[in-house]
Image 1: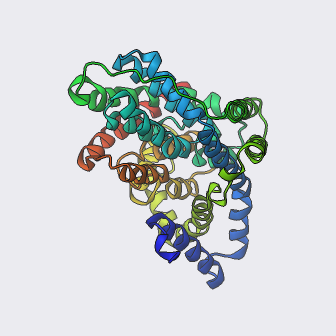
Image 2 (image 1 turned 90 degrees about the horizontal axis):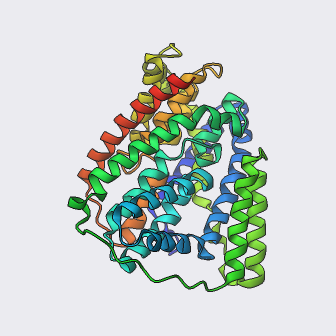
Length: 394
């Protein structure tokens, strides 16, 4: 009975880890290489687990819901104002609380807001899924691929942000333009104005305040240069403690992102194995040896193309293996490709897969042809602009 409840993503995650373990057992992946991979991702898994628990409980404390409703009230019925506010909110959540938070937790908040304000849900949810991917360039905590790149380049949080702020800004700007043209303008959304919803009622102000402060302290910690896994763990422990005091029933094992942890662990066993048996050669041919100019665009294009075939995380790992750590420009270009480019297919990123599942649960119809065509336009335009900006500012 329990096995029947497993979703497609659960089976994929379990299968990936099983395959990775088999590769180690059979010797296809040397034990030393496997240990190096696991050692590398151990701090990332701690961060991922802590930040997801923090975000889940912050949602339970109504922080996201209150902020989203307040934004709709501030917009005063103007779609243009609401568009700017929603894109800013989704971008900030992605930047500071990880793209999966935007896709998994902000999406249901927006879906709940839509009927209260009598807003079509598709523009709101497209905002969350696109900005979950394209706004994830600025900080290492924004995306697991960024954490891997920061480690590979031996950069701190501030140094990473100093290299990526301009491409990140361009990526968000291009995304906003595509969102407005294809989903938010009058001819797409269907109404001239929306109805501002009533002010939200906060069930437990202590939970709300502590969760909001914990998130603020987490952001302050990472900006101050604290180890991201430590900052996330401390913030999560604070919120878990207050929930244990005020509302223990909401603490459950389901808060721990088992699927993500299993998926990432399996991935870091499977991709190095595939690299030893041909994937590394293919990526080396596509990316080439050049470290700037056309080489940067090839790295970005290779990352984007492979992301929409096998997911952005293995795409980054595969590309990283063929780019020397000293070649910062192609590595950062690869990062741009896998982050901005994973918006074409539903499986381009794990965040997009989880987003589709939320839309299915809430019976929001997503026209797949339009999703893929507009995503392709966004990917090509955004990557070209962001890589050009990286080259100009480096």
